[in-house]
Amino acid sequence: MSDIGAQHQLGNAVAIALTRLTLSNFRCYDFERLDLDPACVVLTGSNGAGKTNILEAVSLLAPGRGMRRAKAAELARRDDGCDEDSGRAWGVAATVQTTGGPVDIGTGREETGKKSGTRERRVVRIEGESARGQSVLADYVDVVWLTPQMDRLFLDGAIARRRFLDRLVYGFDPKHAGRMNAYEHGLRERAKLLKTGRNDDRWLSGLEEQMATKAVAVAAARKDIGQRLNILAVEGYGPFPGARLSPTGMIESWLDEFSALEVEDKFRAFLAEHRSIDAQVGGARDGVHKSDLQVRHVPKDQPADVCSTGEQKALLTGMVLANTKALALDRGRIPLLLLDEVGAHLDEDRRTALFEAIRAMGAQAWMTGTDRDMFNSLSGHANFFEVSKAAVNRVNE
Image (tube, one colour):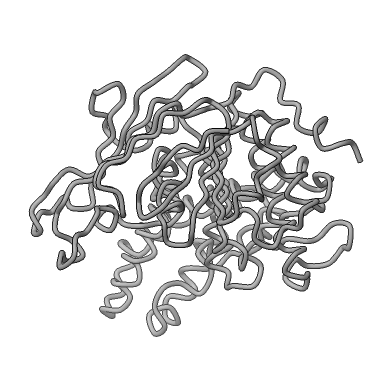
């Protein structure tokens, strides 16, 4: 195996970096501004101090609902006695060093009335000008994250793994979310129609046509990302063992044997055949909403779910590194890397190897932890901040 630094040579890829981050009325922060060097960012402090909220803010600079998947209404700072959705505004803004130079971007929620029909609408601004939607953020920022909640990825149900896999796809192709949303919309509308007992073949066939087309596109994209990441993931990264990703499901398996058009026909027929059963149980018996992601520990040739907690954390870390490198090679820019409580379940050797990999890639990694000493090897190579009671102060090195 080649050394970890050599594995991460990314040619002419340019690292995305934030040189300023501003939070307004966001989570526990009334107002906070961080001025930064393009190097890594280390946030230390006690649990509950507000470290993860900063990482979540950074994750919202890319399309999607961020690393906590929170609704826009949940992100505004709430005073004592304030209800869950008071219609209050919040904002996250940043100056981003991109491949084309510095760009000011921002996202947030404008103040609304509690009964407003646009409460969930997030606004996006690029250089002060309003953008039509979140998808434009993908032109400037890529973000990859690893959180403690992801440690159970291999043990929890298929929903979490599908979500993880779709996030990987979304990083390469923001249109993937639209295809998945269209499929799920067709799934819901078909279920409603079946529940009424109306056997309207014209409407059902139209919905099943939409579902079949979108399902094949979704499954094909998942398989493509699995194959693309495996090129980088199976070898492993120093002490992080190789991983093999295999999206699984009925449609995914059909695509191994038949053309995309043939699979569309098969799934349409499958849906039509199971209308009576689906009318009783709701939803659809099978489809890309039932797919899963299998991961194997390559050196041991065993499923990830039977590995130890430490091995699972190491596998997941290696997968995140592979995803970071794959995005950099694909987009020509190295994504921001968010590592929340990065020291959990990583021994000292693995932590050192992770920091070396990050530095070798040149990524601006945002890392949190309760123990400042855990990051000593990054002294002189990172921005250090102490977070206490929703206040952030730079620590001089």
